[in-house]
Length: 117
Image (cartoon, rainbow, N blue to C red; front, side, top):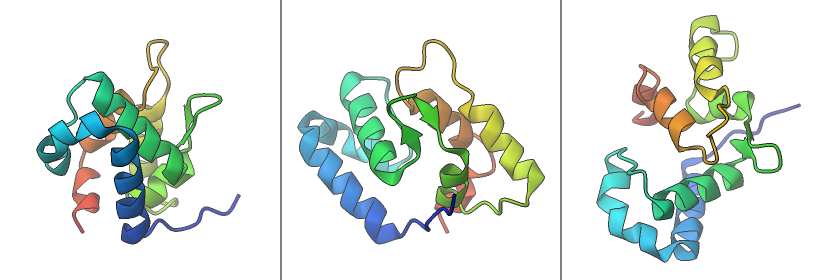
């Protein structure tokens, strides 16, 4: 399947839409801007919303779409090392009702720097 690129405009648009759907998440806006994601229901709902709109997660199966995540983090699919980081992070655990843990797993690697480019 062809993975479409994810523009900054798309990300901003989805963040805004998901903020409106989850108004209480705005209390954590400063945290979110600093790549901090408190484990609270408002933030989990917001993150799930954005991830769903970006196609990072399939909400029916709760599976993360590895190729789309790679695109989001500007990872070359041929870069085995970086792809392995993503694959290891997105493995679902039984308790994963939300994307938060898997997303933070990736953020806590060198791939985080790709988001700031």
